[in-house]
Amino acid sequence: MAVFTPVSLDDLTQWLSQFPLGKALAIKGISSGIENSNFFIDTEAGEYVLTVFEKLSFEQLPFYLELMRHLAQRGVAVPAPIANADGSIINALHGKPAAIVSKLAGESQMSPGPVHCYAVGEMLAKMHLAARDFAIKQPNLRGLSWWRETAPVVLPFLPEEIQQLLRAELQFQEDFAETETFNNLPNGPVHADLFRNNVMFDGDRLTGFFDFYFAGCDTWLFDLAVTVNDWCIDVHTGGLDETRVAAMLDGYRSVQPFSIDEQLAWQPMLRAAALRFWLSRLYDFYLPRPAEMLTPLDPTDFERILRQRIAHPAPALV
Ligand SMILES: Nc1ncnc2c1ncn2[C@@H]1O[C@H](COP(=O)(O)OP(=O)(O)OP(=O)(O)O)[C@@H](O)[C@H]1O
Ligand SMILES: N[C@@H](CCO)C(=O)O
Image (tube, rainbow, N blue to C red; front, side):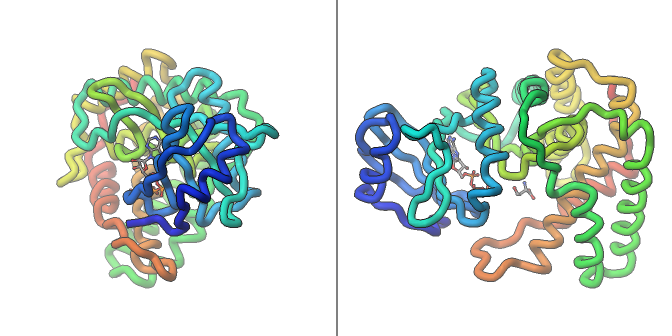
């Protein structure tokens, strides 16, 4: 569906000469992405993924790609950006920023069981630890300030009862963000969008996290809550599957135990993670970008998840 910038084998052959990857052998557009133009490329050095960035600029990209390089160098399974002869990992292709990264084996596991959730929790904690000394700072651009800006934009589209829920939750999160508990939470670079379609598995073996383009600095617990809210739920009701939640938390804890403040913040953070995706989906639903090609994702999934987290607190984090 989505290759916005076509790249031919001839284009690739010329462009690839700056990289230590030998000759280009084949290029194939990837249909599933909606943000960028992605291609699988075969080179004499092996298989890679080429991304031509459609929205992010040369100035914005270093945070994401350098973070991936940093993590890959520390043994976290993420696509490793490939540098050209000058050491640059972001280079213009058809006038747009582009990058080549290593290809992860396997495919997304869309019906995860506890074994997958354990593996994701374990690697998430490893990723948080490995990112602690990453030098570039960028806040989560879909954090509280963005919620504060976005809520008034979508509120006029919503019926009164749903407006009340949104206003009340935003106020709850504003208040929570002022607490000592919140301010004591460990933080650093986080993925912030680690849904099932952003992780690869080869059978039951986790082969990598990818799509880091919502990454930013935020609390580790927020990242874990985003991940639990997608991987460990009954997708029809939004309710938590306690076995999968326990597996993901066990995986995380096996690397990095939870602090007292993280234990106290767990319920509000699951709600914050639901609010974040409810708001972005509401925004994309009511204010679609011009020429948006795909059907927007359903905001009511995350309204339901938020209502569930308010009504049925998750098992305590210990
Ligand atoms: N490093 C990689 N290794 C293997 N496959 C990849 C890699 N990067 C991307 N892909 C494949 O390309 C598809 C699209 O990539 P991605 O999800 O990053 O698209 P996007 O347009 O950048 O973002 P979005 O998910 O928001 O649409 C993925 O579903 C995956 O199948
Ligand atoms: N994971 C997001 C899509 C953008 O990456 C969502 O499900 O709303």
